[in-house]
Amino acid sequence: MPEPKKTKKDEAAEEAAAVEATAAEEQVEETPEAQAEEAEAPKKPRRTRKKAEDAAEEKKPAAKPDRAPGEVQVVRAQAKYVRTSARKARLVCDHIRGKSVMDARAILAHTPRHVAQDWQKLLESAVANAEHNHELIGEELRISSITADEGPTLKRFRPRAMGRASAIRKRTSHLSITLTPKE
Image 1 (cartoon, rainbow, N blue to C red):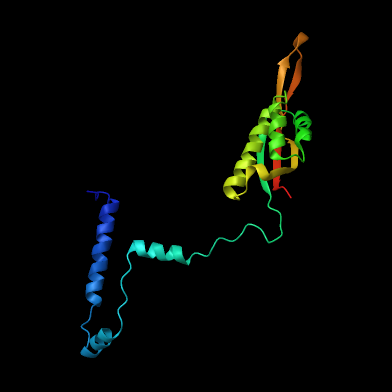
Image 2: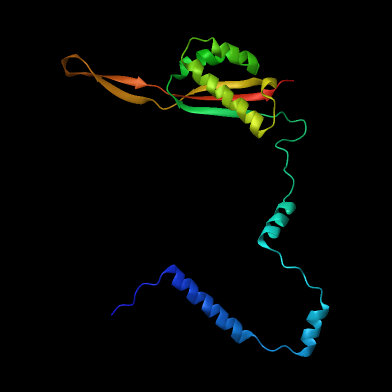
């Protein structure tokens, strides 16, 4: 008859029993001299888990600054696979290159092209990154670089007359923006 499978609890109980048995075998009566030495030695207080965690937190080094002194802080944000062609995206990004964040927001809010909404979301993401991660003030930033690169093209086909098919290229683009503090 096969033995029933052991559960993890059973295995853990067996291991604990084995450890206790070996510990009991290893205990040897101490000589009076050894007991006297232990009594004289200063006792260290036992640490609880919570105290050990607190001590580990105290030992952590202070956070290093993200940049060297005199170096300009740079904040980036990217939007990949945006469903618009890079050419259309570049027409909008040329309007806001080098502008302050406040000016860029105003320009994008009044730009009629659909891709302006994608640029606006990306700009707000970059400003949020600057405020949260680098403790910068959003209104005191300017756009140092802005690019719209080509992404992969989705290839689709459309039926045409006389059994032919024509290709449809659904283009995508990768938008990226870099902000720096005003000087």
